[in-house]
Amino acid sequence: MAKEIIRVENLKRDFVVGEEIVHALRGLDFTINEGEFVTIMGTSGSGKSTLLNILGCLDTPTQGEYYLDGNSVRLMGKNDRATLRNRKIGFIFQSYNLLPKTTAIENVELPLMYNSSVSAKERHERAIKSLNEVGLGDRLNHKSNQMSGGQQQRVAIARALVNEPVIILADEATGNLDTRTSFEILTLLQRMHQQEHRTIIFVTHNPEIAQFSSRNIVIRDGRIKEDTYNSDIKSAKSVLETLPKEN
Ligand SMILES: Nc1ncnc2c1ncn2[C@@H]1O[C@H](COP(=O)(O)OP(=O)(O)OP(=O)(O)O)[C@@H](O)[C@H]1O
Ligand SMILES: [Mg+2]
Image 1 (cartoon, rainbow, N blue to C red):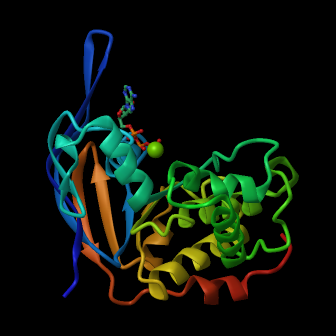
Image 2 (cartoon, helix red, strand yellow):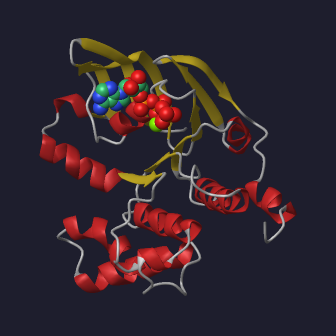
């Protein structure tokens, strides 16, 4: 039996801008089970990032409920929410959000700094393991500004994975990358989904990416427009193999 990991009920988020209220999310209902790879699509301004930020406990809804692994996020204080986020969620952003002039290892160690049960030695070892998983074992001591966009995004993925999160949230994670590098990242995420059974929620503008996920939710104007399952998941790796090495 698949285990429910996310449930939202009548989720709403308003923003007050001057005299105006922006209804970014107008009442969403859905559940996501552990091990799903969900793409979230929709035009610019439809509410994708607003939703992802709430799911990632970076923001709270104006109305409605969000249960993360059975915990009502609404009822939690700021600190508990931060702890839950740190333990359960790995975030990947379009702009990588790495610390500048800081090595790959140091960037990946960061989420473990908040966990006092992890010693400095273990932190270091786990960061190396995580960087090896994303194929950056030979770039451990490179600083973020000494790496390509794709390499920086892989560091960000290693950082998202180092805590062994149940959920990986990605907001336009391939938005700044060329086609080949995008497929490298997608291949990596598919591997985490298929081999490690991780739950992935991947926000994107690109409708082609839905074929690589197991479920696609389309948002329009703060509401769910479509929610479809995909039984014929396309392999990003096989597409990658057809792409030329240089472009
Ligand atoms: N902090 C904020 N303050 C005020 N309005 C906001 C805020 N964040 C988002 N909005 C508004 O909420 C709506 C949804 O924004 P959101 O960033 O979720 O869209 P999106 O689907 O992620 O768009 P994009 O594809 O361009 O990233 C937009 O109308 C936006 O202007
Ligand atoms: Mg966005």
